Length: 140
Image 1 (tube, rainbow, N blue to C red):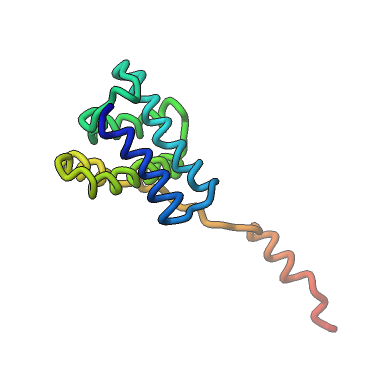
Image 2: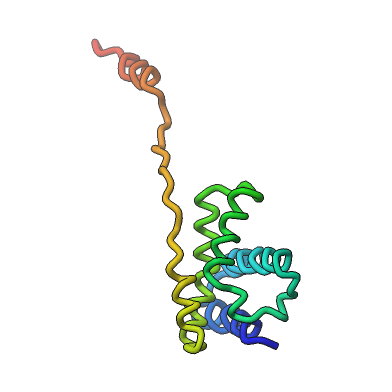
């Protein structure tokens, strides 16, 4: 067994569940991103998750995973960024427990989120606003 499996297990049981007392829904959300990543790596390398070592989870592989999310899975930039954040968390946790992999972990944590245009929330169009302003009887 490599160092990845016990570290991931401790991240979920020790950090999320016990120390941070996160909700089961949050844990499920954090679980899905590494699961997708491990499936992606399995398709690329034919390695089972139990066979993976830290060198298999380098910044190049993570970046390829993010591209896969956008192109193949048609995820939005926001979803891609959420998956990146959810995959960064176990790496942050691992950085404290595996200093021998500090450079690799640092490179993964340095992957920036992708910028995106925020939509302006609008509820009414300008003609609708004008109609509402004109609607009250100003004589009353």
